[in-house]
Amino acid sequence: MRIIGLLLLFFLLCTSCGGQKGKHGRAENLLVEVDGNFLYKEDLQAVFPAGLSKDDSLLFAENYIRNWIEDVLLYGKAKANIPDNSEIDKLVENYRKALIVHTYQQELINQRLSPNLPEQDITDFYEKNKNLFVLERPLIKGLFIKIPLGAPQLNEVRRWYKTETHEAVESLEKYSLQHAMSYDYFYDKWVEVSDVLGKIPLKADSPEEYINANRHVELQDTAFYYFLNVTDYLKKGDEEPYDFARKTAKDMLINMRKVDFVKGVKTDLYNEATRKDKIIYNY
Image (cartoon, rainbow, N blue to C red):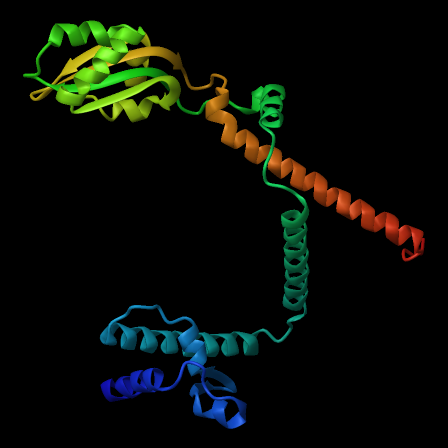
C-alpha cells in the first residue's frame, strides 16, 4: 500500500499542473475509475492544500481518493434502491430554480443597490423602531483602573476615580502610565457589564445588580487594587442605545431595502409580461 501511495504522490508531483489535452491526455491523468465514474489528477490537484509535507500530501491524497470512492459507491447503492426518483427530481429542480433566482437577485442587488446608507436614514429607522432594540445584556459607562497593592498615591487614586472632571481624568491617565496594570476609560461609550466583571474579583450573588447599586466599587486581592466608577447603567430589557444598536439597525434597514428592491423587480417583470400579453389565464 505504501508503494502504491508513493507512486501516487510521484504521479501527482511529476505531471505538469496543466495536464495534457485531448482524449489520450485525460486517460493518462486518470487516477481512479469506479462504475463509470472517473477521478482525474486535476480533480485532486484542485482541492490539494498548499504547503503540505511529503507525508501529509500522501495522506491527504489517499484519504481524498478513498472518500471519493466511498461516495461513488454509496450513491450508486442508494440510487439502485430508490427506483422512483420523481420526487427527488422535483426537489432538485426546485432547488436549482431557487439557486438560479437567488444568484440573479444577488447580482442585481450588487449592481444597483448601494451598501452605503446615509447616517440620518439609520438614525430615523432606529427612532421609529425602538421597540425592536431591547438589551439582552446590561451595559455600563464608566472608568476602571487596576493597580498593584504597593502603588503610591492611593488616596489620590480613590479621589480621582470617583471624579469625572477633566482634571481628575487627566491625572488618572498620567498616573496609569507609570503605575497601573490596567486602565479603561469608557465614560463616552457603552460596554457590556460582563466585560468589566471579568476584570475584577467581585464575589456577589448578583454581580450585575451589585454594580448597579454600587456605582463606586473598590476591591482588592492579594496583589492588586481594583477601582470602578459607574456613571450610567442600562439593565437587561431596557432600550438599546443608538451607538450600541447602530450596526443591527443598519443591517435591518439594508435587508428591508433589498426586499423592497426585489419586490420592485418582480412587479416590473409582471407589468412587462402583461403589456406583451405573455400571461395567459385559463380560468
